[in-house]
Amino acid sequence: MNPFSFTVATLALLAAGAVSAQSGTLAKIKEDQAATMGVRESSGVLSYTLGDGKYAGFHVEVCTRVLTDVQKHLGLPKLDIRYQAVTSQNRIPLVQNGTVDIECGSTTNTTARRKDVAFAVTTYVEEVRIAVKTKSGITGIGQLSGRSVSTTTGTTSVQLLRKHKRAAGVDFKEVYGKDHADSFLLLETGRADAFVMDGQILAGNIAKSKSPGDYRIVGEVLSVEPIAIMMRKDDPAFKKLVDDSIVAMIKSGEMAKTYDKWFVQPIPPGDTRVGLPLSNATKAAWAKPNDRPVEDYLKK
Image (cartoon, rainbow, N blue to C red; front, side, top):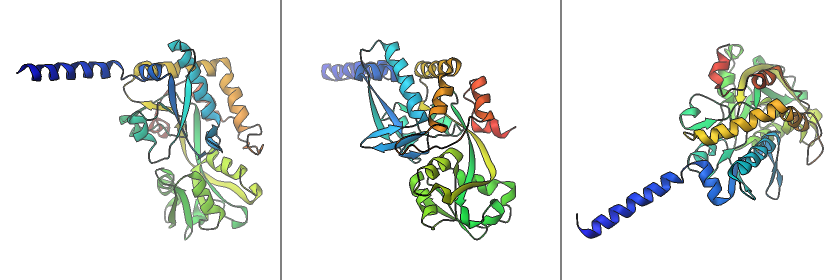
Protein backbone atom coordinates (compact mmCIF):
# COMPACT_ATOMS: atom_id res chain seq x y z
CA MET A 1 0.00 0.00 0.00
CA ASN A 2 1.52 3.33 -1.02
CA PRO A 3 1.30 6.43 1.25
CA PHE A 4 -1.53 7.92 -0.82
CA SER A 5 -3.57 4.72 -0.60
CA PHE A 6 -2.97 4.56 3.16
CA THR A 7 -4.20 8.13 3.57
CA VAL A 8 -7.34 7.47 1.53
CA ALA A 9 -8.04 4.27 3.46
CA THR A 10 -7.53 6.03 6.79
CA LEU A 11 -9.85 8.88 5.84
CA ALA A 12 -12.46 6.38 4.67
CA LEU A 13 -12.34 4.57 8.02
CA LEU A 14 -12.61 7.84 9.95
CA ALA A 15 -15.55 8.92 7.82
CA ALA A 16 -17.28 5.57 8.36
CA GLY A 17 -16.77 5.92 12.10
CA ALA A 18 -18.24 9.40 12.06
CA VAL A 19 -21.29 8.23 10.12
CA SER A 20 -21.76 5.33 12.56
CA ALA A 21 -21.54 7.63 15.57
CA GLN A 22 -24.14 9.93 14.04
CA SER A 23 -26.42 7.22 12.66
CA GLY A 24 -28.94 7.08 15.51
CA THR A 25 -32.12 9.15 15.25
CA LEU A 26 -31.41 10.96 18.52
CA ALA A 27 -27.92 11.93 17.33
CA LYS A 28 -29.36 13.13 14.02
CA ILE A 29 -32.02 15.23 15.74
CA LYS A 30 -29.48 16.71 18.15
CA GLU A 31 -27.11 17.66 15.38
CA ASP A 32 -29.86 19.22 13.22
CA GLN A 33 -31.82 20.64 16.18
CA ALA A 34 -34.77 19.54 14.08
CA ALA A 35 -37.00 16.51 13.59
CA THR A 36 -39.03 15.56 10.54
CA MET A 37 -42.53 14.27 11.17
CA GLY A 38 -44.19 12.19 8.48
CA VAL A 39 -47.82 13.31 8.14
CA ARG A 40 -50.77 12.49 5.91
CA GLU A 41 -52.95 14.77 3.83
CA SER A 42 -56.22 12.96 4.58
CA SER A 43 -55.84 10.12 7.11
CA GLY A 44 -59.10 10.92 8.83
CA VAL A 45 -58.69 12.53 12.22
CA LEU A 46 -55.32 10.88 12.87
CA SER A 47 -53.43 13.17 10.50
CA TYR A 48 -54.69 15.67 7.94
CA THR A 49 -53.80 18.96 6.29
CA LEU A 50 -55.20 22.35 7.20
CA GLY A 51 -53.55 23.90 4.17
CA ASP A 52 -50.58 26.29 3.94
CA GLY A 53 -48.21 23.60 5.18
CA LYS A 54 -50.10 23.09 8.44
CA TYR A 55 -51.19 19.68 9.74
CA ALA A 56 -53.43 18.52 12.57
CA GLY A 57 -54.93 15.42 14.10
CA PHE A 58 -54.66 12.97 16.96
CA HIS A 59 -51.37 11.42 15.87
CA VAL A 60 -49.88 14.77 14.92
CA GLU A 61 -50.54 16.03 18.46
CA VAL A 62 -49.24 12.83 20.06
CA CYS A 63 -46.04 13.02 18.02
CA THR A 64 -45.60 16.70 18.87
CA ARG A 65 -45.72 15.75 22.55
CA VAL A 66 -43.24 12.91 21.94
CA LEU A 67 -40.83 15.29 20.20
CA THR A 68 -41.14 17.73 23.10
CA ASP A 69 -39.92 14.91 25.36
CA VAL A 70 -37.11 14.17 22.88
CA GLN A 71 -36.10 17.84 23.04
CA LYS A 72 -35.97 17.73 26.84
CA HIS A 73 -34.00 14.48 26.80
CA LEU A 74 -31.41 15.97 24.46
CA GLY A 75 -31.25 19.24 26.38
CA LEU A 76 -31.98 21.31 23.27
CA PRO A 77 -33.06 24.94 23.78
CA LYS A 78 -35.38 24.55 20.80
CA LEU A 79 -36.44 21.88 18.34
CA ASP A 80 -37.69 22.68 14.86
CA ILE A 81 -40.47 20.29 13.82
CA ARG A 82 -40.64 19.88 10.06
CA TYR A 83 -43.55 18.24 8.25
CA GLN A 84 -43.11 15.80 5.39
CA ALA A 85 -46.28 14.64 3.67
CA VAL A 86 -46.20 10.90 3.00
CA THR A 87 -48.50 8.48 1.20
CA SER A 88 -49.42 4.83 1.67
CA GLN A 89 -46.88 3.93 -1.01
CA ASN A 90 -43.83 5.95 0.13
CA ARG A 91 -44.17 6.16 3.93
CA ILE A 92 -41.94 3.13 4.67
CA PRO A 93 -39.14 4.04 2.22
CA LEU A 94 -39.05 7.62 3.56
CA VAL A 95 -38.64 6.30 7.10
CA GLN A 96 -35.99 3.83 5.99
CA ASN A 97 -33.86 6.38 4.15
CA GLY A 98 -33.96 8.94 6.96
CA THR A 99 -36.15 11.54 5.23
CA VAL A 100 -38.71 11.04 8.01
CA ASP A 101 -37.70 10.59 11.67
CA ILE A 102 -41.12 9.69 13.02
CA GLU A 103 -44.18 8.79 10.95
CA CYS A 104 -47.45 9.97 12.44
CA GLY A 105 -50.19 8.91 10.05
CA SER A 106 -52.44 5.85 10.06
CA THR A 107 -50.07 2.91 9.63
CA THR A 108 -51.06 -0.58 10.74
CA ASN A 109 -48.40 -2.50 12.66
CA THR A 110 -47.87 -5.70 10.66
CA THR A 111 -45.31 -8.49 10.80
CA ALA A 112 -44.30 -7.81 7.19
CA ARG A 113 -43.69 -4.12 7.82
CA ARG A 114 -41.68 -4.86 10.96
CA LYS A 115 -39.01 -6.37 8.72
CA ASP A 116 -38.32 -2.85 7.42
CA VAL A 117 -39.36 -0.46 10.22
CA ALA A 118 -40.17 -0.33 13.93
CA PHE A 119 -43.43 0.61 15.62
CA ALA A 120 -44.10 2.36 18.90
CA VAL A 121 -46.67 0.99 21.35
CA THR A 122 -50.17 1.05 19.92
CA THR A 123 -51.96 4.37 20.20
CA TYR A 124 -55.19 3.51 18.39
CA VAL A 125 -57.00 0.29 17.43
CA GLU A 126 -58.86 0.59 14.14
CA GLU A 127 -61.86 -1.20 12.68
CA VAL A 128 -61.93 -1.53 8.89
CA ARG A 129 -65.45 -0.79 7.61
CA ILE A 130 -67.45 0.15 4.49
CA ALA A 131 -68.82 3.62 3.65
CA VAL A 132 -71.68 4.05 1.17
CA LYS A 133 -74.16 6.69 0.12
CA THR A 134 -77.25 6.56 2.32
CA LYS A 135 -79.59 6.34 -0.66
CA SER A 136 -77.71 3.34 -2.12
CA GLY A 137 -79.52 0.88 0.13
CA ILE A 138 -76.28 -1.05 0.69
CA THR A 139 -76.08 -2.45 4.22
CA GLY A 140 -73.37 -5.09 3.99
CA ILE A 141 -70.81 -7.05 1.99
CA GLY A 142 -73.40 -9.25 0.29
CA GLN A 143 -74.82 -6.30 -1.62
CA LEU A 144 -71.52 -5.31 -3.23
CA SER A 145 -71.73 -7.89 -6.02
CA GLY A 146 -71.54 -6.16 -9.40
CA ARG A 147 -70.58 -2.87 -7.75
CA SER A 148 -67.43 -0.76 -7.76
CA VAL A 149 -65.49 -0.54 -4.50
CA SER A 150 -62.85 2.12 -3.90
CA THR A 151 -59.83 1.98 -1.66
CA THR A 152 -56.44 3.68 -1.47
CA THR A 153 -53.38 2.47 -3.37
CA GLY A 154 -50.88 0.84 -1.03
CA THR A 155 -53.41 -0.25 1.61
CA THR A 156 -54.82 -3.70 2.38
CA SER A 157 -58.50 -2.89 2.80
CA VAL A 158 -59.88 -4.53 -0.35
CA GLN A 159 -57.83 -7.67 0.33
CA LEU A 160 -59.42 -7.80 3.77
CA LEU A 161 -62.84 -7.46 2.17
CA ARG A 162 -62.15 -10.32 -0.24
CA LYS A 163 -60.93 -12.58 2.58
CA HIS A 164 -64.00 -11.99 4.74
CA LYS A 165 -66.18 -15.09 5.04
CA ARG A 166 -69.27 -13.15 3.97
CA ALA A 167 -67.57 -12.05 0.73
CA ALA A 168 -67.68 -15.59 -0.72
CA GLY A 169 -69.22 -15.40 -4.18
CA VAL A 170 -69.36 -11.59 -4.13
CA ASP A 171 -67.88 -10.21 -7.37
CA PHE A 172 -67.03 -6.51 -7.32
CA LYS A 173 -64.73 -4.19 -9.25
CA GLU A 174 -61.83 -2.47 -7.50
CA VAL A 175 -61.06 1.20 -8.16
CA TYR A 176 -58.16 3.01 -6.52
CA GLY A 177 -57.58 6.52 -5.24
CA LYS A 178 -54.06 7.92 -4.87
CA ASP A 179 -54.86 8.94 -1.29
CA HIS A 180 -57.82 8.71 1.09
CA ALA A 181 -59.38 11.99 -0.08
CA ASP A 182 -59.21 10.76 -3.68
CA SER A 183 -60.77 7.42 -2.71
CA PHE A 184 -63.65 9.24 -0.96
CA LEU A 185 -64.06 11.44 -4.04
CA LEU A 186 -64.66 8.28 -6.09
CA LEU A 187 -67.58 7.48 -3.78
CA GLU A 188 -68.75 11.11 -3.67
CA THR A 189 -68.89 11.42 -7.48
CA GLY A 190 -70.53 8.05 -8.06
CA ARG A 191 -67.52 6.36 -9.64
CA ALA A 192 -67.57 3.93 -6.72
CA ASP A 193 -70.52 2.47 -4.84
CA ALA A 194 -68.56 1.88 -1.63
CA PHE A 195 -65.31 2.95 0.01
CA VAL A 196 -63.50 0.37 2.16
CA MET A 197 -61.04 1.77 4.70
CA ASP A 198 -60.27 2.37 8.38
CA GLY A 199 -63.43 3.44 10.17
CA GLN A 200 -62.02 6.71 11.50
CA ILE A 201 -60.77 7.66 8.02
CA LEU A 202 -64.26 7.01 6.66
CA ALA A 203 -65.84 8.99 9.49
CA GLY A 204 -63.37 11.85 9.10
CA ASN A 205 -63.95 12.19 5.36
CA ILE A 206 -67.71 12.00 5.83
CA ALA A 207 -67.61 14.67 8.57
CA LYS A 208 -65.64 17.02 6.31
CA SER A 209 -67.80 16.41 3.22
CA LYS A 210 -70.31 18.91 1.86
CA SER A 211 -73.28 16.78 2.96
CA PRO A 212 -72.35 14.37 5.79
CA GLY A 213 -75.91 13.09 5.96
CA ASP A 214 -75.56 11.64 2.47
CA TYR A 215 -73.19 8.92 3.71
CA ARG A 216 -73.11 6.20 6.31
CA ILE A 217 -70.78 3.48 7.55
CA VAL A 218 -72.32 0.04 7.21
CA GLY A 219 -71.78 -3.68 7.34
CA GLU A 220 -69.44 -6.01 9.10
CA VAL A 221 -66.14 -5.13 10.75
CA LEU A 222 -63.59 -6.47 8.27
CA SER A 223 -60.57 -6.32 10.55
CA VAL A 224 -59.33 -4.96 13.87
CA GLU A 225 -55.91 -3.39 13.46
CA PRO A 226 -53.37 -1.76 15.80
CA ILE A 227 -52.32 1.64 14.46
CA ALA A 228 -48.98 2.94 15.68
CA ILE A 229 -46.32 5.57 15.18
CA MET A 230 -43.57 4.32 12.89
CA MET A 231 -39.80 4.89 13.05
CA ARG A 232 -36.54 3.45 11.77
CA LYS A 233 -35.67 -0.12 12.58
CA ASP A 234 -32.77 -1.10 14.88
CA ASP A 235 -32.74 2.16 16.85
CA PRO A 236 -33.64 0.96 20.37
CA ALA A 237 -32.69 4.21 22.12
CA PHE A 238 -35.10 6.28 20.06
CA LYS A 239 -37.87 3.67 20.25
CA LYS A 240 -37.59 3.50 24.04
CA LEU A 241 -37.89 7.26 24.34
CA VAL A 242 -40.92 7.31 22.05
CA ASP A 243 -42.56 4.41 23.90
CA ASP A 244 -41.86 5.96 27.32
CA SER A 245 -43.41 9.24 26.22
CA ILE A 246 -46.56 7.53 24.92
CA VAL A 247 -46.94 5.36 28.02
CA ALA A 248 -46.58 8.46 30.22
CA MET A 249 -49.38 10.13 28.24
CA ILE A 250 -51.58 7.06 28.73
CA LYS A 251 -50.94 6.81 32.49
CA SER A 252 -51.46 10.51 33.14
CA GLY A 253 -54.79 10.56 31.31
CA GLU A 254 -53.44 12.97 28.70
CA MET A 255 -53.91 10.41 25.93
CA ALA A 256 -57.61 10.02 26.72
CA LYS A 257 -58.05 13.81 26.74
CA THR A 258 -56.24 14.09 23.42
CA TYR A 259 -58.45 11.35 21.98
CA ASP A 260 -61.60 13.15 23.12
CA LYS A 261 -60.33 16.41 21.61
CA TRP A 262 -59.99 14.90 18.13
CA PHE A 263 -62.54 12.09 17.95
CA VAL A 264 -65.45 13.52 19.94
CA GLN A 265 -65.19 17.32 20.09
CA PRO A 266 -65.49 19.72 17.12
CA ILE A 267 -62.27 19.83 15.10
CA PRO A 268 -60.78 22.33 12.64
CA PRO A 269 -61.14 23.68 10.10
CA GLY A 270 -64.94 23.48 10.02
CA ASP A 271 -65.74 22.57 13.66
CA THR A 272 -67.23 19.26 12.55
CA ARG A 273 -67.49 16.22 14.82
CA VAL A 274 -66.20 12.77 13.87
CA GLY A 275 -68.17 11.29 16.75
CA LEU A 276 -66.20 8.13 17.56
CA PRO A 277 -66.08 7.50 21.33
CA LEU A 278 -63.12 5.55 22.70
CA SER A 279 -63.53 1.87 21.77
CA ASN A 280 -63.03 -1.10 24.07
CA ALA A 281 -60.23 -2.34 21.80
CA THR A 282 -58.28 0.91 22.16
CA LYS A 283 -58.93 0.96 25.91
CA ALA A 284 -57.49 -2.56 26.14
CA ALA A 285 -54.37 -1.55 24.18
CA TRP A 286 -53.81 1.38 26.55
CA ALA A 287 -54.41 -0.75 29.65
CA LYS A 288 -51.43 -2.94 28.70
CA PRO A 289 -49.22 -0.88 26.35
CA ASN A 290 -47.61 -3.08 23.70
CA ASP A 291 -46.34 -3.07 20.13
CA ARG A 292 -47.98 -6.31 19.01
CA PRO A 293 -48.66 -6.61 15.25
CA VAL A 294 -52.06 -7.12 13.67
CA GLU A 295 -51.43 -10.86 13.30
CA ASP A 296 -51.68 -11.21 17.09
CA TYR A 297 -55.13 -9.59 16.97
CA LEU A 298 -56.27 -11.92 14.20
CA LYS A 299 -55.48 -14.97 16.37
CA LYS A 300 -58.20 -14.06 18.80
